[in-house]
Length: 150
Image (cartoon, rainbow, N blue to C red; front, side):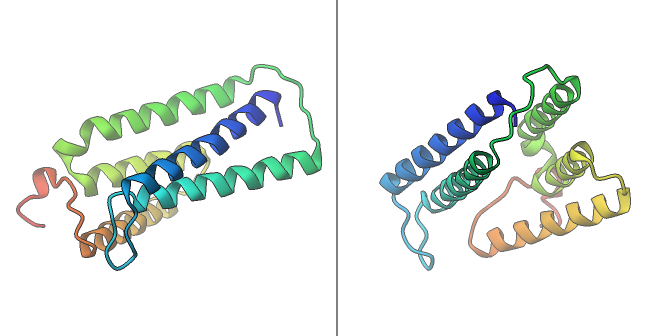
């Protein structure tokens, strides 16, 4: 792994600790009565554990690659950031379901999935499962022009 990527792992490790501690201060409540900090708390813990796992793996392998500039990684990073930027920009007007479906499809394609049928099935399943779980929990998503149907 490149030296710069190890630094990014340490930043993500620290970010996981910060998000979890701040979310705990906000109030996490319980699973039956969740507070506003429960979801960020769980995401912070997940970020902390995943970065800890990756740091440990890198320390164990002690693999050092040359620190050259890889244009493919740069292009993918710019594409991912652009996709997420446009997701935040269009979620209010297009609604959660359509915007998330398009975003997930583009993200799966960008990270390397080649089969469009598989990409569309994954995006539909993730989109609808997350929508119905959080709707059941009482979270309201932006509906966009789907207000008539949902």
